[in-house]
Length: 251
Image (cartoon, rainbow, N blue to C red; front, side, top):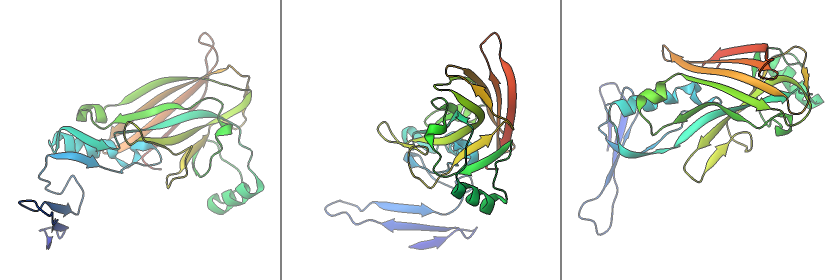
């Protein structure tokens, strides 16, 4: 049976035959934004994919928080994915191949990489990372709405594992589907891109064992996501500020 509501949103109720059962279960489909559709709830399982290249950029936190605050998720509701976040790491200066320069020219109009510019990347080589990736932001979907919407602040300390010419940061999505299954967009081929930001016009030579400190902030304002990172290098008694970078949403 196919129906349309007053807003002309299609909803479909399907009866599923179940041999031997006293009554047949039914499945009802609603079309529209979850914030606008009159969902009955409560639900025991919530499957979602509102994740951007940067985890929170497409509004997953506010969407899940809205469902939780409206008590549409039963106690013990299973969220799939259960959690997601954005991991990041400092990078060695990138040396583009001839093919990469051609592709950069085709997509960006120039063969080089601009400072303070965010690039969507396919097939980023993990060997360009100077240290293991750490969380830039992290979202646990089975928590209270207030925690999902809360501002996140982190002071992340990287220690380089090799000599390198530090000049940027790489960000990638990490999705925890359940206790056993994780999607890491740096390690796997997916439809998501990863993100590279060149911070410095001239790379900063750092020997192995150097400290790179990132002060991170992620927050929501007027239904938009905002991101900021400030980068320092040096020992705790001699940290030197080298760059800031900020952006909003998927831009």
